[in-house]
Every structure is written in C-alpha cells, then in structure tokens.
Length: 240
Image (cartoon, rainbow, N blue to C red):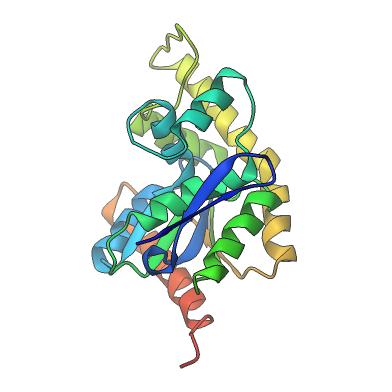
C-alpha cells in the first residue's frame, strides 16, 4: 500500500491511501439510537467482505487517545481551540479507517458522514481516484421516543461526553443529553439530504421503529436494511 501526501486548501498536510485498500461506500443515515451500528453488525455477519465505520465514533476515539491516527494532533488541536475539523481532515479520517480493512473488503457502511458538502465532495473525489464510488445511502427513520429509549438502554459510549467534571445521573441528565443529540440530528437532516439529493445519491428509506432488541422486530428491520443495500449495489453494477 502506498500513501499520497499533499497540502490541502486549509494549509494542513493530509494523506490518502491509494486505491487497493479502499472500498465502495454506502452511507448509513439516521438519528442516534436508530440502529445504524446494530443493523450494520448483523449485516456484516452475513456479508463478511463488508465493514462498518462510525465516523463520529472514530473521531471520538482519536480524541480520547483510544486509537492511533495520522490526524490525532489535528483532532486534539481543534478540540482545544473549539474549532470544527477541516473538511479534508474529517474526510481523510474516514478514508484512513476504510483503508485499514482487510484487502478482501469490498464495501464500507459509513455512518456519521457527511457533515457538509465539503467533506462529501472530498471523499467522493478520493474514492473516484481509486476507482471506487459512493453507491447511495440507507436512511433509517426512528422517532424521538424510540431513539431515546435505545440510547438509554445502551448507555454512554466511550468519548461521547468530553465535558470536564460532567456527572450524569442514570435518568434525567442522560435523557437530556440524548434528547439534545436527537434534536441536533433533526436540525442537520435537511442539509444532509440536500447534499445527497443534489449530487444524485440514491436513497433507500427504512422504518426502524420496530423493537430491534426483539428478535422478530430485528429480523423485519434487518430484512429491509439488507434489501436497501442490495438495491443500491444492484443499481451500481460495474461494467466489465
């Protein structure tokens, strides 16, 4: 595997792994608690050449020092200065994680991406340069009550809260935090869908409100999830 290094428009040195290690991408969209990770994990069990990447969790893990990254210093500098990550850096963090998969991996399910048109266009261009594509997006719909209940059940994830001396009760404080995350998603959803639709990205919508902790409910939603991915792949068959 080779690595290309260049100076991006923000004046930050970035790098992108070359083609062999990158895979096609399907974006998994949905509010926190909608089941993006759980459904992706179950899909991967039946499709082992697929990987799942949570872009947000990856950034949080880098920030918490739980994983090594070429962008650790930049992530920490942005945290200290309370600045957003530059589009190219966020995009390269996604590409960096895609490139870490085994060579047999041919599909990456990525959630928490894109944040805006800049990082979408950046990742799309890097994928095109490597002969890969963004095949579409599977959009999970789930109500406020559904998502807050699921987030309360699973609890805080590593690196989710970085506020100093924050003490959460098991009830109201956490629910307020989860409600804030759901509201933030809704505020950003319109802009995200606009990015995808104006770029001709095919969307597959799924009702994820059934109880995915229950085996029957999970199988129904997983079947719809699998059908959505299958449809996106079928509509993007490569010409031989």
